[in-house]
Length: 444
Ligand code: FES
Ligand SMILES: [Fe+2]
Image 1: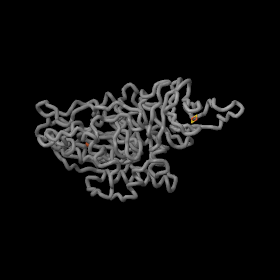
Image 2: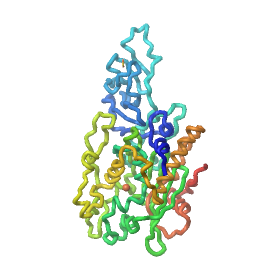
Image 3: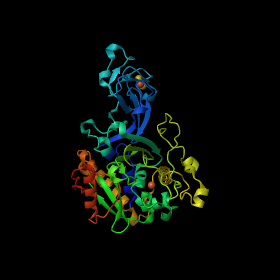
Image 4: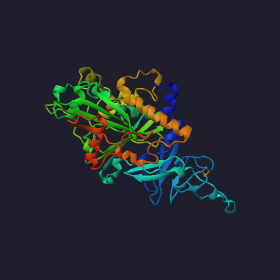
């Protein structure tokens, strides 16, 4: 079980918290590059419990900084983004994207001390259509994680953001919880009604899959297995990658190049950031699962409807279906079993179920089962890494060795190979990458 103390250490991400300090060792995808226009309006960003503004200057450079002006703490969100910097509208002090005060017009020239004033600005890079922020100290800036998706040409990478109104951990745990699939998403589907070759079918032939869970260099991994005909096994594997990334099994292993971040905005809000390869298989490129007669399987509708973005700290990329309208619950569909959950859309089903737990789940009320072993192992891995950083200054996985992420891939495949799971995985990965795979076990 997870104690109340462990629960707090796992879920609190503000400055000075155990997990907040771990998160601040990594690059964080924070916004779409397209959200920031040269000399355009600044954007409010909430990130790891800090209120920030982001803006793009006249030269196209992005600044991300504390929203409070270093003079007397007026919000720079109200500032004028002009001529290579943001100017506070209170007394006109101006800051460049690095936080340097470059103009102090309210002070007589002989008393000007702008060279001594600095806004708290964070390091920023842009990659794959996203603005990435490093919120730790500058001396320790790591490389970006060597995720396979970041090796893909930028015009072949799709990106989407969706805010979720709950803590990052319970959102993330929804991704590595394979045993919910046959219920939440497919509890109404009879395997006999689905074509043999439909990947969806295997996940419902056995609704209580057996699976292996192991620590890996990048975090944790599960390999769930089900029989798939004489001598054949259907495997689905997924990963947790430090500090908040997942890779899910819903695509063919060979081409399922993607990564999913669960970025903590504050303790009760998360930004889901999905990067996928447009030429691979993923929820974004596959056709909707169908019955034998060609009709779509209920509850697997595609496309999310968004509310208009607002300028609020938590006003970006919110879904129209949310707690205020019971996520569009259709009780008739639920009752008649056309949609098991009554909620249409696999992502929305996951969103509803994790938001329904409240902003932060009360871990002391849980009764974790053997089927939750990926979750318990991932919690332990995160907690041990955060405590090792706090107590002994041990850097968590991937900070100094971003290459460990290259060994991580997820997806499904059928094989007649009866070797142990780790060997099967290593062979599958090697066949995709054309090279020996990274050893799975962490050097602990
Ligand atoms: S508070 Fe910003 S210039 Fe005075
Ligand atoms: Fe799910």
